[in-house]
Length: 250
Image 1: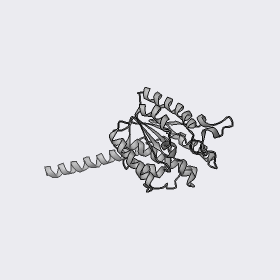
Image 2: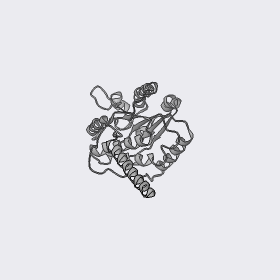
Image 3: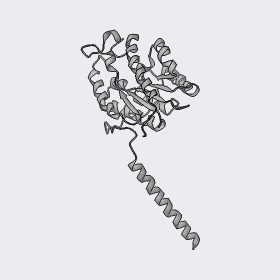
Image 4: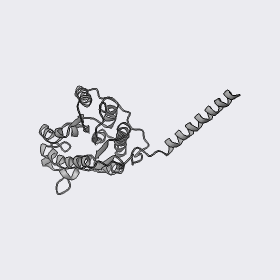
C-alpha cells in the first residue's frame, strides 16, 4: 500500500512538473521583439557548395575555435570585402573576426550558425548584416525580413548573453533600392533586449539621398572610401556598446 501511494505521488509530481514547464514555455518572453513578417515558410538552412564558400567556411570555423574574438562580423560580400587596411587598423585591434561569405543569403548564414561559426568562446558582440542577396534572388521584402529574423532568433538561442548589432541593409542603386528601405523598416522593429538595430545608410548617401557613385563600386558594393565612411559609424557604435557594461535581461 505504501509503495502504491508513493508511485501515485510520483506520477502526480511529474504531471505537475510537466504542467509548470509547459506553462513557463507558453508564457516565456519571445527571443526577439519583432513578430513574424510572413506566414509563408522561408528557405530551409542549407550549405553552399562552391569552392570559395567552402574555403571561407573552413577559415572562419578554424578562426572562431582558435582566436579570441570579442566581436564577430556575420554576413555576405558586404562583410567579407572589408578592405584589408581598414580591417587591420580598426577591427583587428578590437579582436574581431570577419565571418562574411560572398553570395550568402539568409538560409546559408543560418546553416553556418549551426555548423561551426559559433564554436569556441562566445563573442561579446555580433555584427549582423545579411539579406540583400535574398532580394537579388527574387524574394519579397517580407521573406527577406523573415530570413533575417530567423538568424536573429538562432543567435539569441545560441548566444544568450551576446550583444547583437543588427545592421540595416546597405543602400543599392539598382531596382532593389526601394525594397531595401522596406526591409529595414521591418527589421528595425526587432530591436530590444540584446538586439540593437542601426542603419548606416546615411554614411554613403549623397545630398539627393542616393547611393554616392564615388563611394560605390557597382551600386551594391563599396569603394575603400565608402567602407571608411561605414567604419567611422560602426566603430563608434561598437565602442559605445563595449563601454556600456549593463546589459538588459532577455
